[in-house]
Length: 70
Image (cartoon, rainbow, N blue to C red):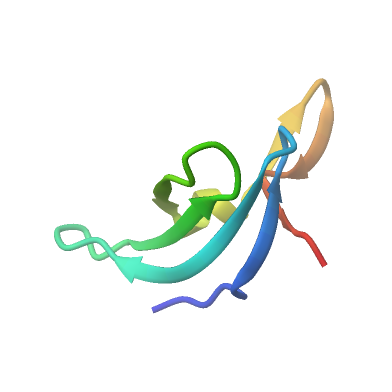
């Protein structure tokens, strides 16, 4: 199973999320990040680890989808 540092991450749109852990999808065995929104109703979300850590292009600029908020 892959590793991601637990902590608070900022989404490229500005909202904050707390990474809780990494889980494995029961069918595909893909590593998934389990994280909680730190706004609104504090919903839990999951996203493939690879997608969580990827760089994305916004208005011609490359940036992280989520960045650790240190």
